Amino acid sequence: MALLLQQVNLFGRAYNKLDLSNDNVTFYESGSEAYEALRKGFNKRINRYPKLIALCSNTQGVVEAIQYAAKNNLPVTVKSGGHCMEGFSCNDGGMVINLSLLNKLSMPDSKTLSVEPACLLKTIYETLIPKAKYLPGGSCQSVAIGGLALGGGYGLMSRNYGLTCDSLLEATMVTASGKVVNTKDDPELLWALKGGGNGNFGVVTQMKFKVQKAPASMISFKFRSKNTTVENAVETCRQWFERSATLPLTCFSAFIFNGRTTYILLTNTGKNNASVNEFIDYFKAGSTKFSKGNPLPLGRALKAYYGESRPVTFKNASAGLYKDFTEIESVIGMVFALVKKKPGILYQVNTLGGVINSPEQEAASAFPHRQCAYFSELQAYWDSEQATQGFLDHFELIQQQFTAAGIRAQYRNYPDINFTNWGQLYYGKNLDRLLALKRRYDPGNTFSGPQTLTI
Ligand SMILES: Cc1cc2nc3c(=O)[nH]c(=O)nc-3n(C[C@H](O)[C@H](O)[C@H](O)COP(=O)(O)OP(=O)(O)OC[C@H]3O[C@@H](n4cnc5c(N)ncnc54)[C@H](O)[C@@H]3O)c2cc1C
Image 1 (tube, rainbow, N blue to C red):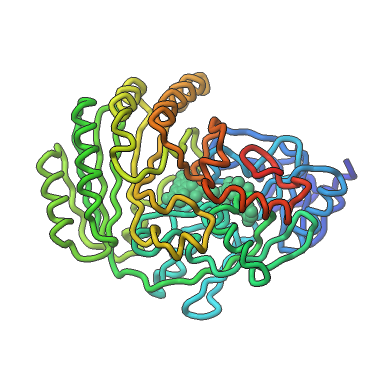
Image 2 (cartoon, rainbow, N blue to C red; image 1 turned 60 degrees about the horizontal axis):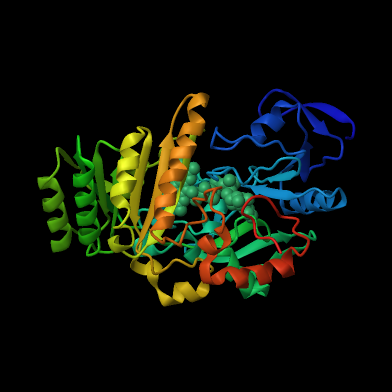
């Protein structure tokens, strides 16, 4: 590779920068501290080593990086916030376009947010909420808007406000040939980027979202039952499905089982109606610990769900989207027995539905799982490297139960490297339409890597 220059970097240390760098893009190769820092993602379990990292300062930098990759036959992956749970925003031996400097946001008017892809949710919430505005997104503070919106994006208020991608009005993208395009000129591209856009067609460098009036406050209720048997956990889960189905759209709820304890979370940004009160009374009666928070101003309430911002070692993946409990009834006992066998693993199911399930949103976006009112996930956390394989094997065993139950819908933002028919699972009926767009925007499969659309 070309000559190296010594400089003082953003991180305040000496680093090596390739001499083909300029104001638009800085290229790094291995052996430098900056390369190491930029290479890493949120999941410490996953380490990939690209040949080159292109740290772009603007859209022109992305164009130049892609042109360089094309000349040098380097496959390209794109990284905004680096939170992909399977590390798909990095690669081995190719080029990673790192967008972490593209993190700015502005409000051209009171109804619109213009934002660069690496802007973190925390920044977005803390900008919008003091203005009484809201963009529905996930709860984790350090997830970036780029990956979140391109794969869908659900959170505590999605039942009332839609998925993040449903608010996407416009995007600028650099294609595989280095051309800058805007979705204003191609509604089909806008459709695809709303749920089908993670790393498939090009590099999104600018996004425009509609913002909505924020709810003033949110209240949280937590129900915990310790030392739960598998049978009791299954019954609590069944009841949770039944009772969460009638909650108003202002509510979000999650059911969690970690092998010993069941947790239920309920949040509400509206008034508690009769079905909310019945839900609370029912689960409170069966809980060993119940907590009712105070209604908090939205910004403060969301902070309680910001989560960890520093990288952790884990596996977290979609364990199916489904319409109701009957879809998992045949296997949930076995799933919970397996969860119980391996402390460190937990099963969680979250409410979707509401406005996510609207025919207009279904027609306007590539996110295909609108009829599913529930999204479930498996999570596993551990510390020692020696424990990794045991957790991964056990995780896979549990995933096989859902496959056996006939679960055929999975969420692209919670990928599992072991999904073999991932195209169908993530994109369902929209897969062929997305592949047609891939043919137009990336016929040479420049954007490639695990679980990236290829033709
Ligand atoms: C702790 C944690 C909490 C989470 N909570 C939620 C949640 O509440 N709700 C929810 O819906 N999801 C949640 N997620 C999942 C999250 O939505 C995805 O991991 C998301 O893809 C992360 O986006 P990113 O830009 O941070 O990640 P990255 O790893 O940078 O990107 C993720 C994927 O999108 C592609 N991509 C990123 N930017 C671009 C771009 N500009 N152009 C083209 N392709 C791009 C990447 O190539 C990669 O395939 C969570 C993830 C974690 C780790």
